[in-house]
Length: 406
Image (tube, rainbow, N blue to C red; front, side):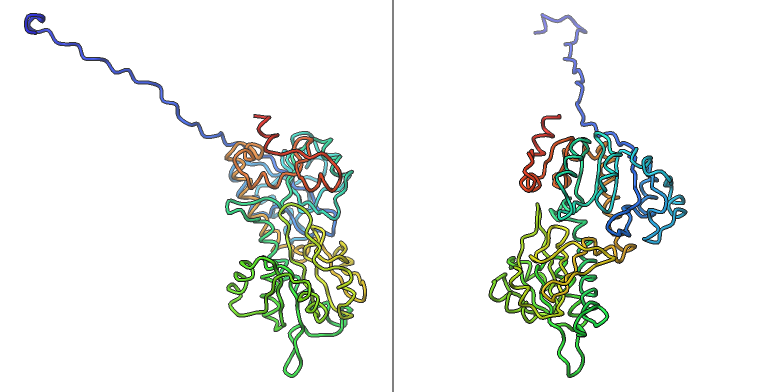
């Protein structure tokens, strides 16, 4: 080897050339433009975003345009919103120039005229009041429409439904107590009873969040409660949460009829994950209930679980069928508008911040299955299978539509 190399020569070392590394680039945060029209239907008193939520979003660089006096019925003034950084508009049409429209109640037919293609619409979907004409109009506008009550979170639960269900459960029982009184056209029964006088009997259909909070209120007032649900785990959880042993049963039609015949109050508290709530109580059973008894069908926004239930409003909240008082207001949480507005605003603000981090709500749909669950109209295509069957309209799988647009 020494003969091949002269003195002082060195073997050249191989050179290492650095290679380009491909790093994932996070999506660019976008600035959202959000419009909040004033509610004008269903005697709705709530507002989609409260000033604290507006302040957080404006602080993040987003633009909020709200119609004048949109928050007045929830005790939030225009001054509260301007101080939070929102812009006030007196022209409803100007509000609909925003990219994202937030509403507490569904849009009215005349408001649909303001929509434009690719706009994001986030409202409830009141199934009893929805019509084929309404859906056809949304298809023509080619918007992306999400139903708030079907949006899921990372834990596969319905956050807006849950928070409003807590309010609805309490409110339902307080409303029932009022309707049982003589001034409420009831039989004059005190829900909790007193010493020497039996308390009223309450039957709750559904052991979910509404059922739990209605039960808490009923027990707190001293009523006797019966709870029915086919989900044994829900019944067990409810008993653990209320901290006492109470009557629970599966939805056996014989047991249910026997309890309803003796009940002073019946609460409908079922929630469907995809479409209409199943009818659990037939008209024949309602006819056997005590005259002057009260039905509060909290499930009415999904069709109701009593065959005799009808949609009512806050001005005329009750109807009487077969001598039984029926309460069917779909936006029962609107009775406590300020509390309900703050609760939903917290959830919507979180969704909007997450959407901004992904670039837009549409981009968030690709990564968030929970948000996709709320979409029922996507750029001219109906994506809710239940609505398609109900109105004999063609529905398409949202996942396929999103894949085809990549």
